[in-house]
Image 1 (tube, one colour):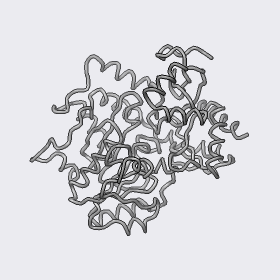
Image 2 (cartoon, rainbow, N blue to C red):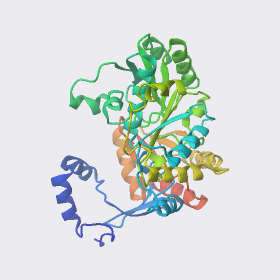
Image 3 (cartoon, helix red, strand yellow):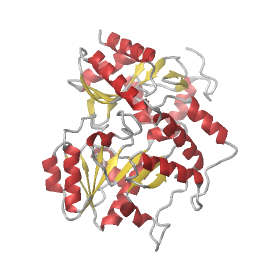
Image 4 (tube, rainbow, N blue to C red):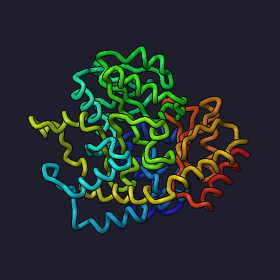
Length: 409
């Protein structure tokens, strides 16, 4: 067994596992060991990461749900933060901030300023909570509709809008939350009523197995919300920032929501930051003349986080970036056509659907043996989430394709 990387604080993996088992998550560790997926991230750079103890080198095609969309330790993001360290810190949410103002304006511009108000947070769950709070406050209504099998985070309101397996262990769900099947406009029409504050949807439900929205589904939901006085919240934590070949996944649907949530990749994989974009009307309850401090987040919009996020926008916003994502997507679709799975894709947001969970797990192990890391969708384990870094070169893309072909040879 090779020596651990210099950054690893434990000289022997046995010592690390004992401390992790004792102080962090013993059953999570046991699960990964049973699955043969016990790994410790060591050296990481670009599209690659290595196991700190075995030296196993993998192309990251899960990217932690899009956190590493621009690769590990992206040099431009890292350089921007390095330059800011010693000059900036978290800042103070009580004060006006040029970093927050600049980032907010740039995020608004990605949707042609249709969602001009921006509230910053630290986690995706926090950002979803903000959207739900604002929707209830703006409409004076209580009910939130979401999709069965969807995922929006593990905090209070986001958890209530998510799948039962994540919330049932903590007692009864919060009142005012209901769910309908995805891609079923009839069920949505039947569910939206005079008490519906908002419908919350992922642009493509990742944890549900990445089913692509049927043509017209989002526009129908948008119209239903508009007709019945409800708001539409789109969760772009995993699909946003170029992953689908546009700034936002919902832009493929020609739909403008009332709020849009982004996170994960906004951090550049370096510094946590999330954002909830919304209309002025929806935002007013969070910044009213009577109480402009009704919502605060100590670390939300950290000035160092804003630096990282602006570097991300610099890269994703470069001419040709979206065209490149779409071209890579088409190349993967062509190459994967003969392989034994259904390819669900929009840009480089891809899912590999197999006939059974067992077949998917077997495929995962074969894929990892070829030096590629992907991961099952949490609520449909017949699907492997396949999210290559958006920065793949042509040579890297061809190497990745060759590895996948060999895994199924």
